[in-house]
Image 1 (tube, rainbow, N blue to C red):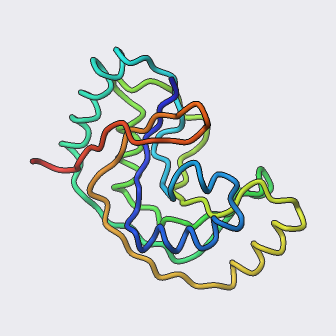
Image 2 (image 1 turned 45 degrees about the vertical axis):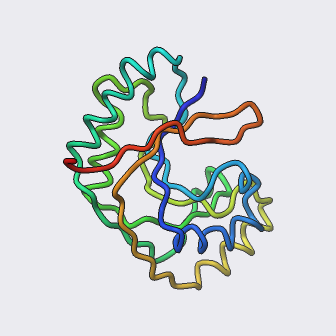
Image 3 (image 1 turned 180 degrees about the vertical axis):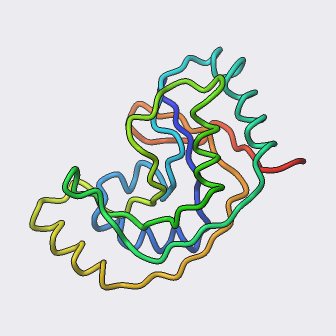
Length: 171
């Protein structure tokens, strides 16, 4: 089964992202707005229960809650026509990403970690140019707290669902 790890931002940030996603993201119905912390990886149920969940609990316990800001959009062009809300880089989010790619955690990093919330993807070149051009003129002033991350699993229809939530910090 495919699993992944993500941070779901607050409703305010999700509402802002969804105002664009419903028009420009074909994955709108498959998963809420999120910051991907670990790309999809394969694991079986016994591996999840015996190795991965204990490791995620340890990572969460040893990671303090942190905040982030979103002030503009960016894109992965020319590699893909994906537009995203740019999560301001912080030591905390990069440290959490590193922890999720070490120890007992399966899967390798395919790309450099760029913290973001996708708002548009799979656009034609012309549509990308128009949408990105208009969105880059907007200023965003979103601030959010991260106090948890989620282990997700993928359903047969491609949608993602929460398997377990891990709260950050000492309990």
